[in-house]
Amino acid sequence: MYRFLLSRQWVILTLLALVLIPVMIELGFWQLHRHQHRVAQNTLIANNLKAKPVPVTELTSPGHTVPRADYWRQVEATGRYDTEHQVVVRRRTNTDETVGFHVLTPFVLADGRAVLVNRGWVPFGADQRTFPDIPAAPKGEVTVTGRLKADETTGTSGIKQLSDLPDRQVMLINSEQQAKSLGRTVLGGYIEQTAPAAPGDSPQQIPTPDSGSIGAHMAYAVQWWLFTAAVPVGWVILVRREVRDRASAATPSTPERETAPA
Image 1 (tube, rainbow, N blue to C red):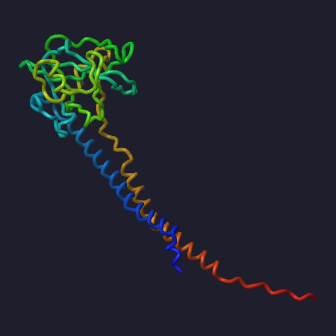
Image 2: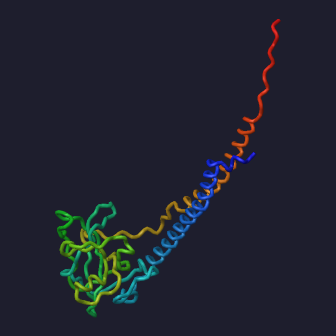
Image 3: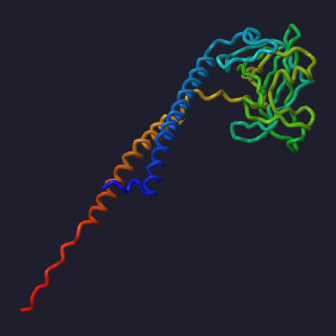
C-alpha cells in the first residue's frame, strides 16, 4: 500500500521535509539568540546610562580597547577643545535619517593627552566633499560629559575605509588613526557628548540609545518552530490522502442494473 513512497516524487518530497525540519529549528534558535542578545544589550544600556559619570581616564587609556561592558558608560573630562585638528566623519545620519557628518573634535586634558569627542551631527555644505560650516566649540577650559564608545573599525562597524578622502574628512572614529595626525597621545575609544548642550542645537547631539525596544525576534522564533511542527503533520496528511485516493481508485465500481421496459 505504501510502495508509492519509493517513487521519485515522494522520495524528493520526503527528503525536502527532512531538510526543512532542522533548518527551521536552527532558524528559530537564531531568532531566539537575537532576542536574548537584544535583551542583554538593553539591560547594559539602561544600567550604564543610569550610572554616575566617572572621569574618562578611569575607564580608558592610550591603546585601550573599550570592552562591551563599558559601552555607553557615563564619563566626564575637563580640558579644552583642539578645533585646529577637528575632522568630520562622513555618511552619518541624524534622527530623521538625513545624511551628513559627525563632528569629531580632539579634547586635550590637563596632562596633555587627548580624547576624541563626537560633538554631534551637522548637515552637508555645498556637497559631500566640501568641509561643512561647524558652530564653534566653547573656548577655554570646559567639562564635557558623554557616553563612552569603542573605536570604530571596518570589522566592527561594516564601514569601509576609503582612500583619497577630502581634507579633514574620515570614515571611521578611531583613536589610533587620529593620534597619528595629532602628534599626541590619545585615549582609546571616544566620547559621545551629551553636555554641555550646543547653542542652537548645532551640532545635533547623538540621541540616547534605545533600551526599551526588543523587536519581534521571539515571535519569529516561535513562528519558525510552529512551521517545523507543521512539516511532519503536513507530510502525514499528504500520505494518508494519497493512500485514500489510491484505495478508491483500486476499488471496482458496481455497475448499475438495467431496468427492463414495462
